[in-house]
Length: 178
Image 1 (cartoon, rainbow, N blue to C red):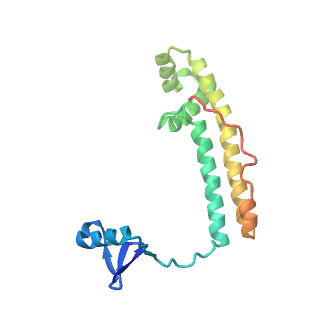
Image 2 (image 1 turned 90 degrees about the vertical axis):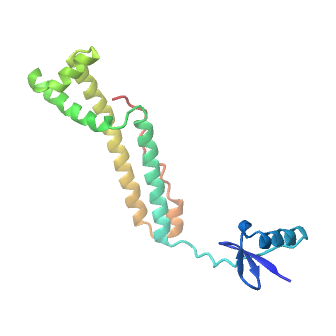
Image 3 (image 1 turned 60 degrees about the vertical axis):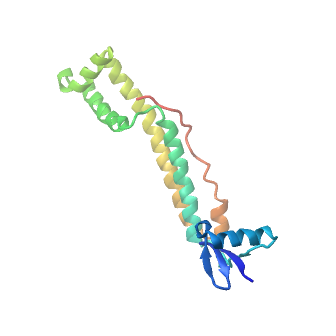
């Protein structure tokens, strides 16, 4: 009489080691009948699980730090459309030029303010204020990320890495509008 074994690839019919599945019609029906009769298939012998190495545990912890950075940045830029951030820095640079140059030297800012129905100085001030809010928060996120990664890399045991608290030092993040 045949017995069956559950393997990573499906069901094996023993002793033939014949791989069967639901498309095998007759063999599959015999397997289902065998189960209905109260039989239980053997389970595949899994190789012993080796504990993770120090390097693997560090990589996992660093990945957690990177995920936290992504969460913070997603929150901070949640009101920003794709491509708008790169454009913001160009606009900010032109706003700085506007503060020290003639309006004809900053045609994009002048045109944008006009299209928005704002004065150019109002748009320039908004860009400067947004940058002054954005830059320190982004710098704090980047600095804290680097601090945590360096600290994790310098740990020497798996328990130290597992117990390392990555939740310290992060800035308060609120959505910004560009």
